Amino acid sequence: MATVPRASTTPTPAEFRYSANDLQFALPAAYGTHKLEKSLDPYPPAATATWRPDPLAASKVEPAICRDVIRYQGVPGIPGDFIAPSTPSAVGFAALGQRSGNARPFVSVNVVELAGALGDRLLDQRLPTPPECAHILIDGKPRASVVERALPGYGVRARYIVRTYPVGAQTYTERTLQYRTPTYVVLVRLDAFVNPEQPFLAFATKARDSLKTLTPMR
Image (cartoon, rainbow, N blue to C red; front, side, top):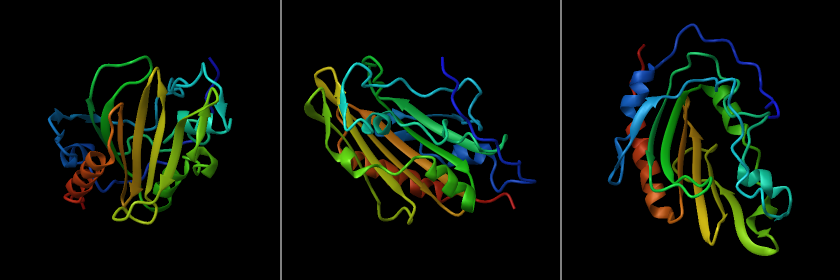
């Protein structure tokens, strides 16, 4: 297996604003009827972390640049690889259905304490979405797309990305919203075969409002 390039971690701050338990507690409890399982989300990612499998490995993708945009890998390799050890972070996760090949329907919300430039750095590990990926041919047929836009209410750095691609005869949709506040970065994600926008945005709003209840330790 090829070695995944990684950035050097930043120094650990002398103190943090939040505890990891505070972050867990501030996450929403559920997505609809699905209870979120909450846990710590340690940074930096483990040394064994790798890119996810290419969901279109057996297919021809045009434009070719869009293959990695759908797969998504960080810059240089693993998102969050620069984050200092012991940085407070948490995740809420729920499976939403049966796995189909590499497609694993789920909903999640991650939060990590990162202020200012470090928050921007995490957002920028995802390269800008090329406009030509709005229309992608899979084996010569228009069956995929990746579209990115801003989302009002989540700050000027908010990145809302929708990826669709075929899994067998079905279309799989991955919705991702990443944004930052002055003190933390949030990633909301929903992957599913049936994945309309309104429930995702409602959950993102719920997560945003729940995290606003965080109180600094100092």
